[in-house]
Length: 230
Image 1 (cartoon, one colour):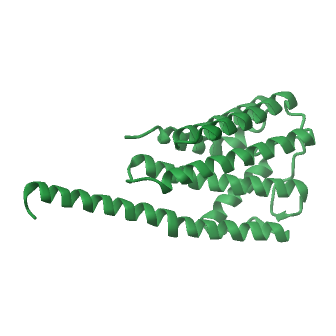
Image 2 (spheres, one colour):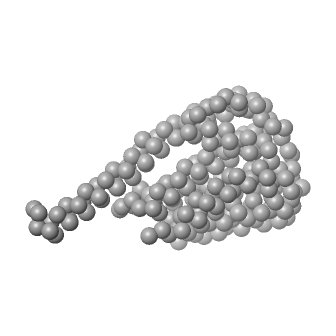
Image 3 (cartoon, rainbow, N blue to C red):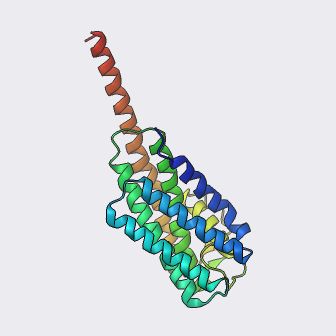
C-alpha cells in the first residue's frame, strides 16, 4: 500500500521543473520556498522518523520560511546564507531518514520504489545546493553558467537552475560538457557526485532488487508448501 510517496515524488519533480519559472518574481520565490519546506517535511514525515528528527525538520523549515518572508527578495547576504544552510540542513535530514527507511525495508513495493526515486532526486538537490553555495563564493567556479543574480536565494535564479541541471547530469554520469567545473573544489564535488550516482545503483538499487526477488521466492515457496507440493 502506498504511503503517499507518490505525492512526494510528484512534488519533488514539480519543484525541479517550477524553479526556473517561479524564481522570476518575489511571490514565486516565496512559493518555491514553501513548496521546498513542504516537500522536505513530507519526506521526513513519511519515512518513519524519530521524534527529534520531526522537531529538527520543523525548526529548519520554519527558519527558511521566516527568513524568506523577512527578506522578501531583497537578497541580503545574511538571509541568503541562512536559507542555503537551512536548505542543506533539511536535505541532509531528509536523505538520512529516507535512506534509513529504504535500508530497513523488509520488502519492496510501490512505496519503496517511489522512495528510491525521491532519494535520487534529493541527492541531485543536495549537490545542486553545494554547487550553488560554491558559485556564490566564487562566481568563476563553473564555466558556462548564466549571469549571477545577487538577490536570488537557493534555486531561485537562472544560474541556480543551471547548477541543478549540472547536478542531475553529473549524478547520472551523462556529462554533456556545456557546464564544466573549474574550481578544484567544484571538480572534487562533481567527482564525488558521479561516484555517488554509480554507487547508488550498485548498492541501494541492487539491494532493493535482491530484496524483491527474495521476497517473491519466499512467497512462492510458501504457496507450494500450502498446496502440499513439497
